[in-house]
Image (cartoon, rainbow, N blue to C red; front, side):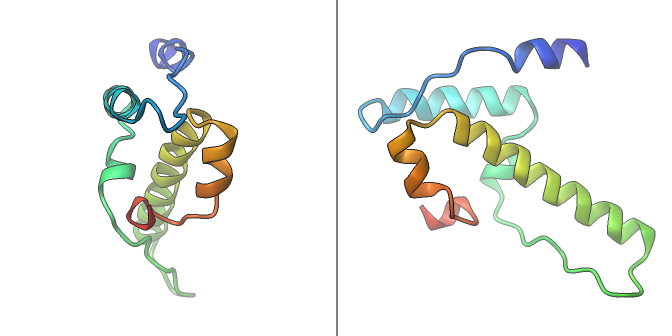
Length: 96
């Protein structure tokens, strides 16, 4: 776990519209190394919980929600301010 914390401190290439191919490649590799790429690549719905949801369903819902959120945060910090303000309200990568 300590190695993941130190790895995630690596300076990211900031996306600024002129470096799209380089940024895309760097971010995919970076997120794969952190096991966060699935949250970007897969377009899945986060299950809605009911009042009688089982503990396993609650756990799966929390894991999927957390994976999406962690993937988004890595993408957001690697964007210029202009790009971030355009994408901050998107709910999935499919909306890009």
